[in-house]
Amino acid sequence: MIIRNGVASDAASIAAFWSPQIVNTSITFSSIPKRAVDVAQMIAQRPCFLVVEFEGQTVGFITYDHFRDGAGYQHTKELTIILASMAQGQGAGRALLEAAMERARAQDVHVLVAGVSGENTNAIAFHKRMGFEQVGVMPQVGRKFRRWMDLVLLQKML
Image 1 (cartoon, rainbow, N blue to C red):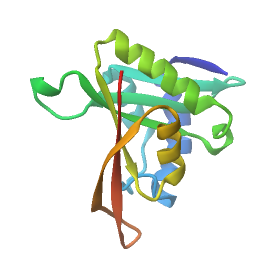
Image 2 (cartoon, rainbow, N blue to C red):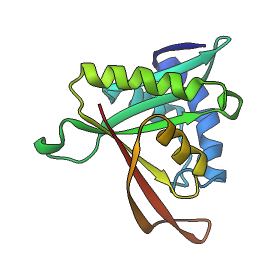
Image 3 (cartoon, one colour):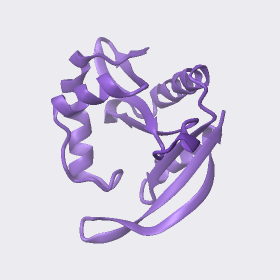
Image 4 (tube, one colour):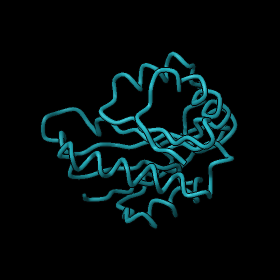
């Protein structure tokens, strides 16, 4: 397993495993698949975009960006972590999050926030195992698959 900075050539692989999760699951409220060009733009613009590689194949990523606009929030970032199904349960998520937290500390980030679909109980449990605290639930703020979904907010002070 290798953790490294994402590069534009990772974009197609990431879009290939992320888009089916967007379309077919409730891990995100979005239903618009990611294109390689969308992912490449994220890689280029985000202050942190790390990938995990198994046997030369990109199988996951973590990124963070602004939590909210405004100078008062500059030390708080919201993260996204997505793994291909083959990488789940293999320690890749932990390795990615630990590397991202190290990067965040070096960038003077004080708080990382995760907004997780209430239906994604595995992700909620993962973040809690990694030291995130659940700080709120926003009931029925998301809609997908003809149903309302809760957003669970978790945070970790670095």
